Length: 92
Image (cartoon, rainbow, N blue to C red; front, side, top):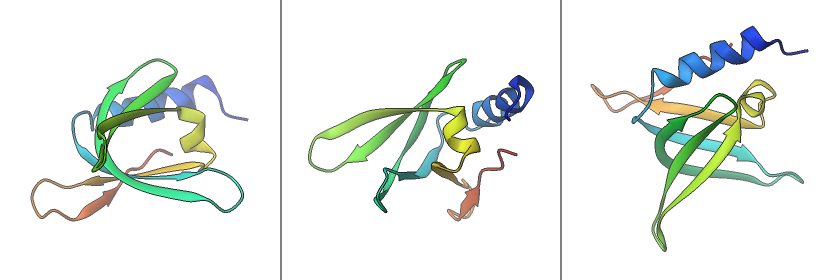
């Protein structure tokens, strides 16, 4: 069972990456996985918000809870600034 401290650690690690470009992989059920690029926009006590780059509609926003990261329903990768390689976000 996830404790409050575990979820707080996840939130704090996300706060360090506010405003950075990320790749979001979300499991939508029934073997449907979406992969989108975006920017980590806001971090709240229970959820975080990602602004997705959508070529058709401009921008859209999605929010997920920290337990989604803990259960691996959502995975994030952060782009490094220096060499533009993806860096896995450590949330454990």
